[in-house]
Length: 170
Image (spheres, rainbow, N blue to C red):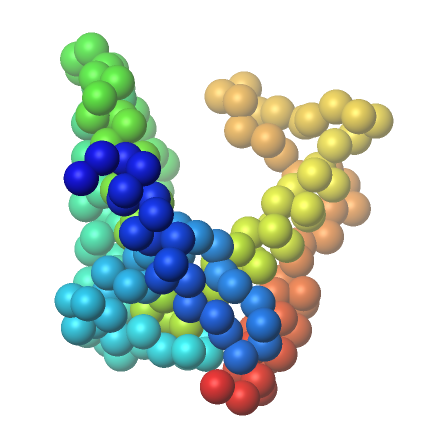
């Protein structure tokens, strides 16, 4: 099947939610996959069963380790500090594969918990843009963006959105 046929096939599989909002295209595709393979797909935010929580954590860790390996790095821990050391050449094909796998696993985790990830992603990204100070980011020596004084996390907004989603009729 060529790329265009594949795209046409999936465009007809959108799942419309009762609130007339459509989750993002890739999360919908993952939800279809999970339904097809008989995995639980709650329609509202929920805490998944322990077995599912363990599975989702293992999948994220396994794919993260594959990504680190694709970068040519070795991971170790020392007193709650992540240590990464270059041990081989990075492999761009494996990097691309690992990034795609992580996206599938993350979207699947959102589905497993009944969370429309795009809504929460947008909340977090909008909030991340408030980390600028005088139009410039504050950075740690390794390049991580830091939170400036007065930064307000979106925890309350996330809580409100979760409550709203949980209280909607299926």
